[in-house]
Image (cartoon, rainbow, N blue to C red):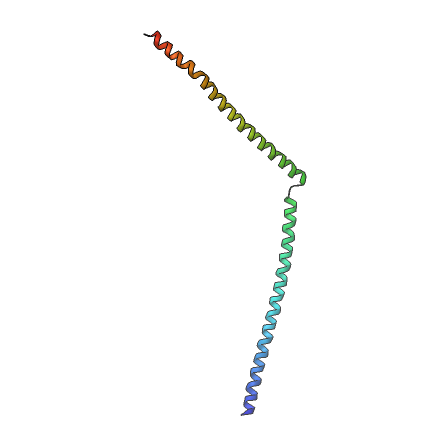
Amino acid sequence: MLGSLDVTTGDALRSFHDALDQAQQSLQRDEKRLSATVQLLSDLTLEVDHLKAERAPSSATCQRREALQAEKVKALQHTRHQREAIAATADHIQHLQAPRLKLTKRVDALRSM
């Protein structure tokens, strides 16, 4: 009976060692895939950084764009101020013309009587 137990235990140990070997081989394959993935990710990161650097405008271009943006803002502000001034002038003219229009209408009404 002990001999049978030894055989069973030996079989179980061999099965365990086989399973352990398979798990270690699987782990090694996974580590290789992970290493390849890390390398690929590193290569892609370098390529993306390179492409960004190529597309990034130079400092002179950035300065020119900022200067143009500032000019645009100034022009928009100037246009807004001009519109406000035109509206204020139109209101002032209308305010000055109002009494004259009233008097003209009154004179016309008196003449037609």
